[in-house]
Image (cartoon, rainbow, N blue to C red; front, top):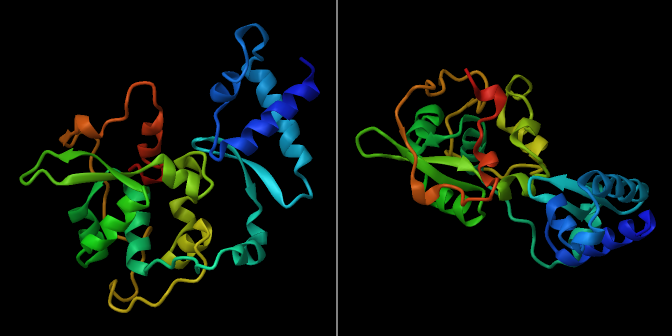
Length: 241
C-alpha cells in the first residue's frame, strides 16, 4: 500500500466517522497482512494536518483521538448555519466547572466552601447532561459525599488532549480569563451567583485534599476495562500541593 493510499484512507475514515478516532482504531481498518504500524499512521496524520494549512478546517488531536473540525476563527460565519443561538452559561456554572477541572476529585461541599455560596442542583445537572463531569467515588466521611471529576467529553469539547493542556493556575487570576482560555466568550450577567470580587482559581484560601485522605472509589463509576477514560480524571499538575 502506497503512502498516498494510506493518507487517503485515513482522510476518508476521519470524515465518515463523525467522531474522533484513535491510532488503534485507524489501524483496525486494515487487514492484518497490510496493517500499517503506529508510526506510519502518525506520519500519515501529520501529512493530513499539513495539507489542512490554509484551509477552513483542521485535523485536531483531542482526548478521544483525531478529528476534522472547522477552524475556530470561522465560527461567526459557520454558526449561522444553525438557527439556535449558542447556549450561554452562567458565571456560577463556569466557576463550578473550573473548580472541578483544577481541584478534581472534589465534592459539592468543597466547591461551596471555596465559592462561599451554595451550588445549585441545576448546575450539577447541566454539567452531567453535557457529560462534562462524572462521579468517580465518594469521600469516606459522614454522608459519603460524591466526588466529581471531568470526563473525556469535557476534554474533547474544549479541544484538549489532556488536563495538562489547561492553562496553568499561575496564569489564571479570574473567571473571565478562564472563560477566554476555554473559548466561552463573554459571560452573561449572573447577579448574586457568586460572592463579589471572587477569584476562582489562584488567590483562594482553599487547600487541596492531602494525598493520604480517605477516599472511597465507587466501583460503578470506575472506567471499564480496556478504556483509558480515567485519564480525564487525573488532577491537573498545577492543582497538586
